[in-house]
Each structure stands twice: as structure tokens, then as C-alpha cells.
Length: 180
Image (cartoon, rainbow, N blue to C red; front, side, top):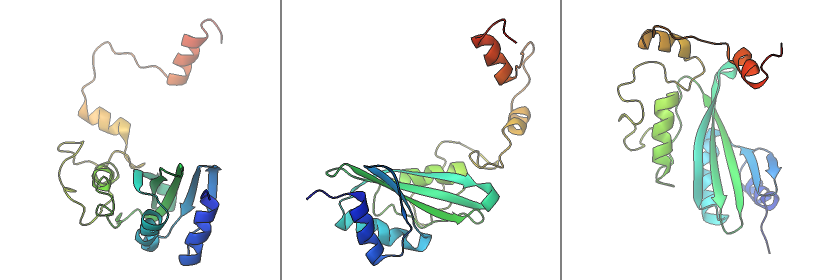
């Protein structure tokens, strides 16, 4: 008997108060999970449903809602299924339980999210070591309140003779010369 994401979701809902399944394709769906249930949901998926591979862990900054959304994408290779668990956490203080002991590769993702978004994962190994941005002290650059232009103007000297174009107008001219 072949397993599918609807069956897996039904089994999860019988055990845990998880959100509705949002299907993208027959082999890919997403599910909203409260932060307090993430570990239990991941353990159920890994140990009972065959989702043995953590594909990725990423974040989205929902600055207007003062939240981060963490997405944990796990894969059941034998059934060829992917399931994304979406967890919303407060932006300040941004902190989420570490899952590095469930999947050691999570430690690398967590280090990146700490450095690029400022999300803390207490207990995750090497979390406070520089990872990508050596010596960075400014607002984490993937936060939506990071001012890229201000940072560039303060950090890099203006180059003589440099010309700056409006990207939309420049590409219009490059792609369709002579049209206006």
C-alpha cells in the first residue's frame, strides 16, 4: 500500500493539533505547526512516517506581523514525498528550539539563520562562531529592516566615473532599444 500526504496528515492530526494540509503537488505539501509541537511532529514524521531526511531549514521575515516563519522541509525518500512544516515565532526575541540532535545537518542551517536573521537556537553547536559574515556587527542582513543602501553607502567608497541606472528603465532600453 502506497502512503500519501493526506494519509500522513490524518495520522498526525489524530495525535497532535497540527494545522490543515496545504498541498502544492501530489508529492509536496505544507503544514502549519505551533512552535511547542515542532519536536513532537518531527519525531513522529521521522520515526513513524519515514521522513528521514531534513532537506532544508529556512526563514521568512514577516516584519508586518512581527514574526519569523521557519520552514522545515523533510523528505520520505522511499515514498518520494516532501513535507514542509511552517512554524511562526516572534521576531523579538527570535528564538526556537534546536533540532540538531534529530538531524545533525540542522546545526548548519541554524548557524546560518542565526547570522543572517538573528534567530537564536539555544544549545545548537557553534552557534556564536562567525559562519558567513566574519566580524559582522550590523543588523542581520536578511531581516527586512536592514537598510542595504545605507549599509553600502557607509561601507563602500563612491567610485569616480561610476554611473547608476534605474534597473527597470535600463533593462527596457537594453531589451527594446529605441522604444519608449
